[in-house]
Picture 1 (cartoon, rainbow, N blue to C red):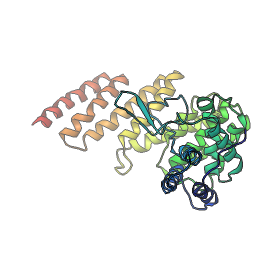
Picture 2 (cartoon, rainbow, N blue to C red):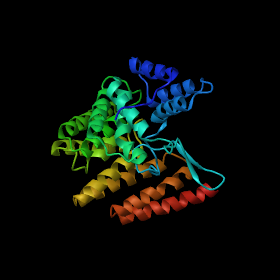
Picture 3 (cartoon, rainbow, N blue to C red):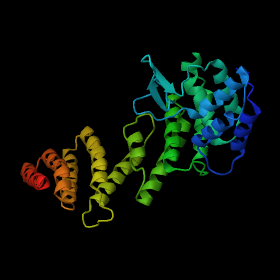
Picture 4 (tube, rainbow, N blue to C red):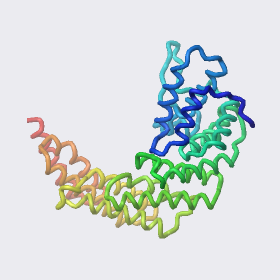
Amino acid sequence: MPSDLVVPSYIEAVIQEFDRAKAPFTELDVQQALGKARGTIQKPTEDENFAAWSEVLAFSLANEWLNGSPWGTYFCPMGSGTDKDGNTTYFPDIAGADARVIAHWISRANSITHPVLKARYADLAWEMCVVIAQLRRDPEMARVAIDAYLASIPIAILTELHNRFAAAIRALDLASLISDQGRIGLARAALLKLHREVMDAHEGLWWLAFDRLIVDTRAGVTEEERQQLIADLEKIVLRHGDTSKAQSFNPHVVQDAAKRLIQHYTRIQRSDDVRRLHTSIARAFEHFAGLGDAMVASAVLQTAVNAYRNAGMSEDSKRVRILMESKIGHAKD
């Protein structure tokens, strides 16, 4: 489907500048530059305004939405509101888009060379064609997006580790959707490589690869890879639960890692490991309570009470509950 949108020169100049860029940038940088350029034109024609808007829309849509996309898609509005009549409005909204926009995004995906731009256009064309234009998805757009997402990771195009993880995870999701085994393997390898960087640095988004891969039967995770992910989280529990090292001690990280492992061990019926990890949570929060005043202790000891109970250590649970009640009284004083 050829694109018949004629993009205004001031918008085209922005896209071409980013396509040639050597310095790192994100989709938000593109959106801001396009919005600024669009605001400089006075009295655009209807066609000019629509073409400019289609470019701004491409980079204004978010890809994280706590309550889910209202369109059932990966891409979603940045926000929403209610008008005076009680109707929900979205920012931005795709209501004005049509098949011309999809055709334009496909054309961009085929002509643009920068991986950040190419991934965005191709993924939009793949993901939004159904809801915008009632068109059948083209697997080629998914393949273009996957390759571009993966190309953006190793060349430091993305400025934050979170964005690099997001690119790898989206590539894996798309590859799984089209059952492309070769690309599934490449995306999984990219995700595990990022995970290894985080583990080697002892900080960062240690949970993302585990959450995405540990139960996914389509990602082709090997038993060796699965066991390594489990071992990595066990190391996190030990490292951040070591009460002798104040600099690395963090009961909240212990809890987050232990809960993930508890879910895993519960699935495979390893009750001893489940009890052990509940105990790790309890001891971490009991120690944490001792580091602060009565107000802090009274707020965190309930976690220790519950964890000891879940570990089957009823006497320790009662002991800590008595301690908590005492701390609550001191906090009131």
